[in-house]
Every structure is written in C-alpha cells, then in structure tokens.
Image 1 (cartoon, rainbow, N blue to C red):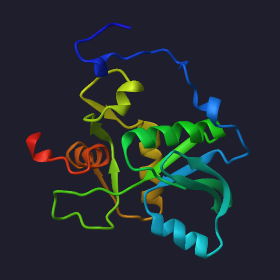
Image 2: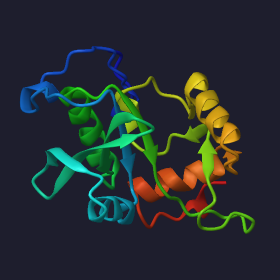
Image 3: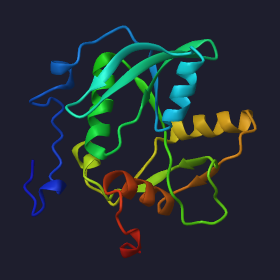
Length: 192
C-alpha cells in the first residue's frame, strides 16, 4: 500500500481483514436476497399483518435491529431496517453477508433541491460523488462512483414492465443523500 498525505486515500486491496465479520457473526439459513429499507413504518405494517418472521438480529452496542424473512412473488427474501450512518451501514451490510445473504437492494429516502420531485417519487441513482469515508475502504479513491450497470438495467426494466414511474438522476441528488447519511446537517451549498 502506498502512503499518501491523507490516509483516507490509501486504498488497501487486501481482501482479508484482521477482524472479519464472520469472526462475530455466524452463518445461518437465510434467503439469497435481502432488502435494506429505511422505512420503519413499512416494516411495522408488515409485522402487524403477520407477513414477517424474525430470523436473527443485527446487534451493536447502541441498537438491536431485527432481521426478518418474508415472501415476495413466491420467493423468500430478507428484510431489515437500515442503519443510519456510514459506519453502522457498512457493518450491517458486512454482517448480513457473513450470515449468508448474497444480493441486496437498499430503499431509502433523500431530500432534494428540485421542486418537481415530491415525497413519494421514486429516484433511481446511477452515480454518486464520494464525499464520505466508508467507500474508500472498498474502492480505490475517485471523485465519483457509478452503480453497477447490469443491476441498474434490471431495476429500470422492472419499473418499466410494471408501469412504475421513476426518475434517473446522478450527482446532485445523490450528493445530498450521501451528505445526509454521513453528516446529517451538512451544508451542501459549500460544494458547487
């Protein structure tokens, strides 16, 4: 690893960590797919309707978040409420992988600066400016990162096939999302 003036820019391509998530999290029988959602009201509604079965929980020193299993289109999937903040979100994802989940989709919320986008509009991000620290532990340093094109195409094709309205955006909306997650009250107007 090359030393840099700023440690955040020192990408280490080593795939084995000194402490692995599997050291603290045991593999269990879970579905291949998992949805991480930031909408707790949806999880509560599904619980009230008896549509969720608790299979495990994500445990930190500050919170315990249940991990559920449900059925969607005849297929079992995991569902968990997302952890707010980059470090907690990263730990949550790593532990879900260690449990046995393999494929993920995250459904969250973000504020926007465009008046034509209202609460409830579906936004599909295709890239993001990296103004946080977590991603630098997983990817080499760069100004922005793009979503996996195959996954993006799959999502867009599903939305089109089901006549679900959506908007595809990059950067400014996603900048705000990342700032909100990593530094909740950050003033994005500094970054033009």
